[in-house]
Length: 375
Image (cartoon, rainbow, N blue to C red; front, side, top):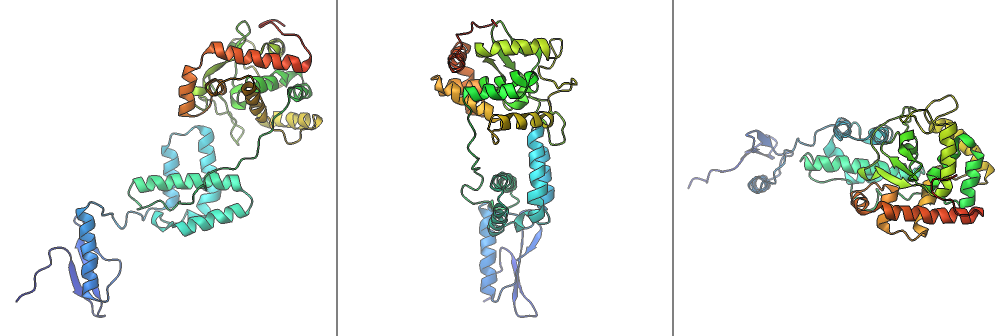
């Protein structure tokens, strides 16, 4: 009796005595098995697995993962439409920490053991925060490769590897904030006070204009941000998130300093920058950094960062009894949830937060209460 003709795939015996299996893939291309088989039964079993995967639509092109990681990651970053600061960070992480290990490999050559070894080596240098950032980027790129069906499964499977264990941020007392404001000099005094008591981010302070300050209402409006890239260029653009576009009430005790700054140092006209250097150039962190380091050393706070002023203000605001919703709105927290919360926060309650901070400032400095808008 003649043997039944195979319905899927072909098997042939090679001169070596081993068996080769081949089949037509869903695109009509003839695909050989990646290896030969010792017996015809083994080859037949392999073909049965391929037939099942095609029927279940689980079949994947075995050559799909033969895409260079470096080129794929570079395209991935370009296609994201990122803010300039994030774009700069991702390209630096790719160039310095991903390319040296993975740049010459195809996507399907990146395995969980290789990822673990790479991360362990990077952490061994003491760069734990950098390792977390680089791992998150790698995981995101490989997740997209999985969605694109270029690889079957993401090789980044280390639980908690993308979580940063940031150093605890410093918190200054109100007295120390005023010491720092004194030591940076009159030109930068108002910026230090606004950073602490309105909790604006440095990049938001850098782009404030005269028209953003309302001395009658006692508020500052955040519309844009101008973070400084490592190249020294100001990257003018939107705030960190939509929630970052906000109006923040200034504690009344700080308004006289703001008014004096407007009179002495801010550029003229509604569009004039609020903070400029002695020669009229826009605020630069590199230039101000030298002034800040000297000031914090005089105040006995050598490790206190300028961004810690924002953290200080957030703690002060929380101490007034402000709710989580109100705090998130005042801070312009960069998350979808915080943006939603911001929409429901009221300017009336924000004024009460500022009044509470105003009382704390005046009590610490031994002053009486300052009427809003008056010096």
